[in-house]
Image 1 (cartoon, chains in turn cyan, yellow):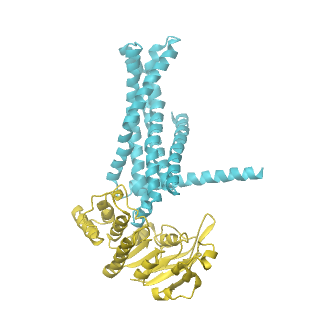
Image 2: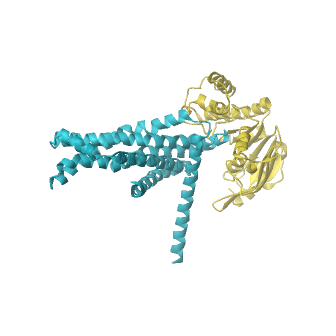
Length: 256
Length: 251
C-alpha cells in the first residue's frame, strides 16, 4: 500500500514539475515577445510554417467535416421533419466546436510535432547551447516567434475552416440532398450570433498557444539523441491533444 | 582570467565533478585531458553558464558568474567563442548566415560589412567561397572549420574548444591544431581545449590538466606531463590498457 502511495506521489510531483517548467517557458516566451530585439522576420517565417503550411489540410478537414455534418444531421432531422434546420446545426457546430477543435488537432499533429522535432534536434546537436554561448536567449529566439505564430495563425485557420465547413454543408444539402438554397442560407445565418464566432476564434487562439508552447517545451527539453527526439515529438502531440480537449470543455463551460 | 573553484556537479545521483579547481591565465592555452565520460564537456559548459554547479564558483576576470544579472551574463558571453564537438552549426541557415549570426545579433554592421567579415573569417579557416552552402553539404572537417569561423567572427577574448580533433583524419586534425595555434598567436586569445587526443594536446597546450574521477589530478606543461610519475596520468598519456585507470570506475 505504501509503495503504491509513494508511486502516486512520485507521479504527481513529476506532473507538477512538468507543469511548472511549461509555465515558466510560457512566461519567458511571452516576455520575449514584448522585449527587444523584436524578431519580426522569425515570427513571419514561423507564421508561414504554422499557418500557411497547415492551410491545405485544414481546409480539407473543414470542408469534409461540414459535408458529413450536413449529411448526418439531415438523416437524423428528417425523422421528425426538421430538415430545414440542417444549415443552423452545421453553422453552430462548425463555429462553436468543430472548427476550432479540429483545426487545433490538425495543427497539433502537423505543426506541433514539427516544432518539437526541430527544437529537439537542435537540443541534442547542441545548437541551442550554441545560441546561448553566442549570447542569444534561445527562448526569445526560438519559442517567442513560434508562440506568436500560433496565437495569430490558429484563429485565421479556424475562420477559414468554418467558411469551408459551412460551404461544404451548403453544397451537400443543396446539390445532393435537394434543400432549397435560399432557405438553407437564411437558416444558416438566422441563428448564428457574433458570440458563436468569437467563442470559436477565442478557443482557437488558446489552442494556438497550447500547440506551440507544448511543441517548444517538449523539443527544448529533449534528451537522449534520436530516440529522445522521437519521444519528444510523440509527447508533444499527445500532450497537445489532451490539453486541447480538456481546455475546450473548460472554456465552453466557463465562458460560453 | 578564468577560475574554477571547488566545482561539484551531479546528474541523477551520479556525481560527475567532485571538486574541480583550475585556473587559466590570460593569453594561455590550457588543455584538459581525460577519458570519455569523465565530465570534460560538463566542466567546459560550467564556464559559459550552460550548466550551473551544485557547489563551487566560476570566476571570469574575478567575477562570479552566478552573481551576474542576465544582462551581465550576456555581456560576459560576448567575450567567448566556442567550438562544439559536432560543430553545432544551425542547419536551417547557410554557412554564411552561421558565421555572420553573432554579428547580425550583436552589432550594427551593415549586411555588406557582415558579408565581408564572413568572407574574411572563412578565408582564415581555409574555406573561401562556401558561404552559400548548407551545413549538410559539408564534411566533418569542414563543419569544424566553419564552427571555428563562427566562433571567431565576433573576435572573442576567450575560445573554448570541445574535442576539436575528434572524428577527423590525422591531416585534418593537424589543420585544426594549426588553426588553434594561429588564433592564439594572431588574436592573443585565452583558450581552453578539452580532448583525449594527446598529439593535439602536446602541440597546442601551454599547460595540460588531467581530469580523473571528478577532479583535476595534475597540471603541468606538456614536458612535465610527458615526464610525470603519476601512474594514472602515465597510463592515460601512453594509452596503455593496463594500469590504475582500468581498475578504477571512471572508464
